[in-house]
Figure (cartoon, rainbow, N blue to C red):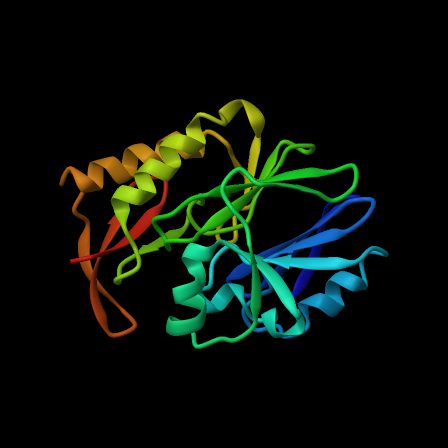
Length: 228
């Protein structure tokens, strides 16, 4: 594990192949996800800030909820509840967050952006004060998992299309995987790549993931792992 300071009020915590973030304001701090192998993300965060720490789960895949058990309550989009409680078999009480909802940390205002497709309830966090987008899997230049029953490429495209309308509100993206940060210009590139996959223009090659046959499609901007 490695803790890297982005600025005086923001940290990225590297946990193997995934990372999570701590965004601090004057009154409280928000953990954006809680790691994969670590079980003490709250302790790590509280060692960095002197304000109360809360947790937001961008989505409930296992590499993002490692320390969720440390929190009595946490923020999550309701559409992600089936993944959290049924697919992952986890317990705990979540506080619903919705697309467009604002969160004021004290001198630092955030907005929740719903980006379905990778999972139904995937969200990312727009730091309105710092002009940056934090967390989640949909916007990155690495491998984007789009195979299995909960993944849906049409929804993914529509989420990115809407995110493009916010292009004047952020300059950088801090994804949960792969390069960090990436430029905001990656958003339309990913949308166009996903549209080409849906149109059958990019088909990639057959591969296997977790014993499941998939199609690996390297689009030049990111690699999409899709159903056959």
